[in-house]
Image: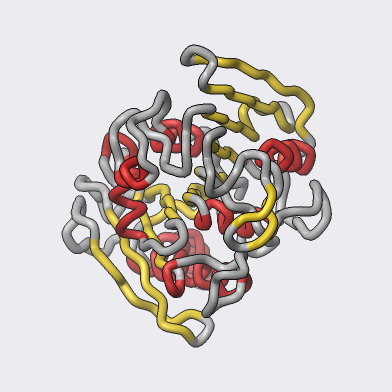
Length: 309
């Protein structure tokens, strides 16, 4: 009898990671649910989520958190990037947090939260998702645009924030909190940490060469990417140029795995989400569609990586 009870306890313990969100009937899969609220660091915060249309509550799903730019919202980033469309997200749960006052901590213009509080908010979102849905905690990814891309940099350098994610990506990243080289002030929880960045050579808001930005000094983008190659102990680099010399792709092998750090510089791209189809941020620059589709590139990048147990 005692042996039977012990075996039963072991079975329950093994099933514990699936106990919270798995098995629960979802609300309207395939339709984004907006501004779901929670308390984090004593503040009222919100996020939106989008479940795959064929969501199965008994199957574990990858999760992608998308961080909007300044003076913006998760809804804008969802519409601009089109990442909730199943041609990009496929079978991933898409999540769009909202920064306080329309931005994320790091630049001097941000008010209302610290970097640590925004990192805590991300932790609290993940806990909330685990309680509601059947998620695979080894396949949580983060992507951001502009100020949201800079927050991706803050998460990557945080021993707490980086521990959440299997891989991270930024578009037109404004890396206000990562200025001082490969080691100073950057402490990812484990290495290598897969990182991808897409940036425009014609970006007038977050200039490729770095310098003074709207929220303080910014590093040259090429330096920032190289710092991550150094942090990850990358041993070799390949480069290619396509689309008539407009797109420059760099890829590093780290720990024996290809493509752990990747960078796309698009000479013709301004401060907008890279897309071969017209999107909202392109209209605001203004410019038309470009040669690459960041949402497709980033999702394929994420699919290569899972966090070690």
